[in-house]
Structures are given as structure tokens and as C-alpha cells.
Image (cartoon, rainbow over all chains, first blue to last red):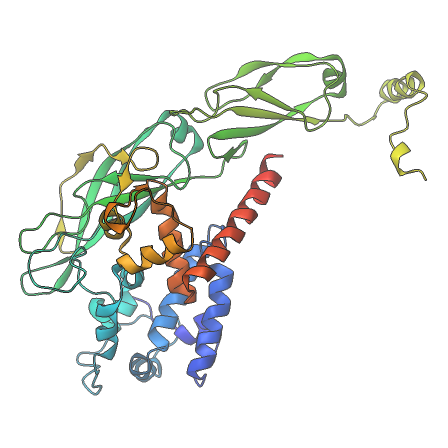
Length: 329
Length: 103
């Protein structure tokens, strides 16, 4: 396990006030929050920032962390010394606050690092794994529903696939001790899934207490970026380069689709950006999407003498052509 | 790692377009307190069928919208009106991004 420099993560010094820590967190959260920033590395960065904030914004945790951090540097191998926290008397105020939060509010802590957990414990922020018994009463409570993500390629989204997913779920044993259980699930991803949709696996979430049923597992679909195709809901777009003469005179050209190459008729007189629709060739489903080939006119350079002559003949054939006519006043 | 389960084969259900939620099952699915969902209904982010909370019915799409709303609320300490404003703006940005991406 590596030591984490939470101050460096937030870009503040060890003497920063709680307000400065809050401001630094807010600024970085706006920059990296995965709902605001779709860059692939943003989510991991946000988790680091959120963990650093959670560790430092609580004065008791911060005091304990400060004591440890005097002996370690960022990235240095770290094992908490036995009884390292014996000199601290945690009031448990944070734990009380956690119990009053919704499961969602506290759920972020489940994603914190082993380093955080080794310092502050798994139960430092998150309440137990039961979910439905919101009133805090005694008695059986159904296990909490869990969420994970599954990434598929665009081709897999089109035709469906099977995925083996490794999950680490916290389980509370009879003594109240939290342990991690690793499970592998082989999941059938149906054809036609869209980004952001969810698959529900009944009974695969958190374990219930006192004989109550387990929660469900929800898998959020991510469709990986594709070098050729772009998704808009169930519709698929691809850029289709054509030569000027194919666009002007019309042609039948080979066009890629996730389902294979098709012969596509380019109407004569087509202009740059024209969208040619292939009905039902997008993502399959109850309402199948369409595929749009967006024409891009690829102008070949005039390198050789015959090619220059061809462009000259082109110009001679269109003496009235003035593409800048609309700019003249 | 303390325990390892044997492999399991699962055929899941697609939530969007195939499932619906009650207030209780939506709260369970997203880990929300009922009053958090109430606030999102009051702001118009969620539009359940039914006359009142006891017989509200939410479409499968509500799962994703509610999860995003709860994340924004938690991570930026936003109230429901702020969350809905941010989500409206995010939807506009996504529309523009799609237009750029797809031509």
C-alpha cells in the first residue's frame, strides 16, 4: 500500500484552513466530476479528490492523518503502525452523521482506497450494507442494491456479448466485521444496449440481514469510443469520404457499418455534409436506430501536370462559379 | 480478499424501456431517502404516473436521472433546484457535443 499525500491531491499546504480545503475540493470537483467531465481519466481523478476531501474536512480524521503524514512521503510504501490511532479519541461524530445519510450519500466511501480504509476503517463513512430499512428500526432488512459499470465496444453493443465481471462486495459477518468478497459473474449483455442504460441482476447486490433477501445489482452500460462510428442514442454516424466527381456525378461506394460493409448509393449533386440514411442499421432494439453516412468531399491535391490541367479544365467549365458571391457587398 | 464465489451465469433485465419503479423500489435501487426523490419530483426532474407517492410509477429512465441528480447533490452540496438547473445545462451541452461529433 502506498502513502497518499492528501494535501498534494487537493493542491493545498498542510496549514490550509478547513475553508481552503473546502474551496480546493469544490474547484477540483467542478473540473473532474464524472458527470461534468467525460474525459476517461476524470472519474479516477475525482475519486482521489473526493477521498482527500473526506479525509481532511473532518478535523479528527485530519489530526490523525497529520500525525501519520509527518513520517511518510507521497507514494512511499505504507503500513499503519500497530495501535497508531491509540492516541486519538474519535468522538464518532462522523459515524453518527453517516448513519443519518442516505445510502447513496455514504456510498462514495465504498470506492475509497485501501489506504483510506486502513487509516479510518471501512465504517468511517459508510453505514452497513443493509438498504431498505431506512427508518433504522430493528428487524430483517433487504440487502442494498449495488451499482457497477460494464464497458462494451460498439460492435458488442450491436450484436450483444457475454462478459465476466469481477466484483468486490463488502459483507458484514456475524461479529459485525466487514470483509470483502470477490465474485465473478458472467453476464449476458443483450444486443442494442445504449450508453447509460442499466442491466438489473436480481439478488446479486448486498446481502440481507436476518434472513431478508439480497439486494439487486445494476450494471451501467458504457460504450467505448470507436475510431469510425459515433453514437447518438440508437443512431450511428460515420464520416464517408467521397471524391468530388463521386459527389457531383453520383456513385455507388462501399460504406462501413458495424454489421458489415454495404454498397451505398451517393446521389448525384451531393454536397459536403449530406447525410445518407440507412434505415434500421443503427443499434437494434424495439425501435432500431438508423445509420447515417455523413459525406465529406475529399479534394485530391493537384500534384502532377495532368492533374493541374484537369483542375484548369474544371475551372474553364464553370466560368460563372463564384463560391464567395455571398460575401460581396 | 476473504471469500470468493464460484462463477455465476446471469441473464439480466434491461431496465430502460423494460422496467418500472415504485417510490420504494426506486429509493432502494439508488440508495435514496424518499424525501430526496420527492424533491426531484417537485422540481419536475422526475415525472411519475399516479396521483400521489403511494401509487407513483417511474419509468426505467428515472434510474439514471435520479443517480446523476443524487451524485451532483452530494458532491456539490446542491439543493434540488440547483441540481435540476445543472442537469438541464448538461443536457444542452450533450446535445451540442453530439452535434459536433455526428455532424
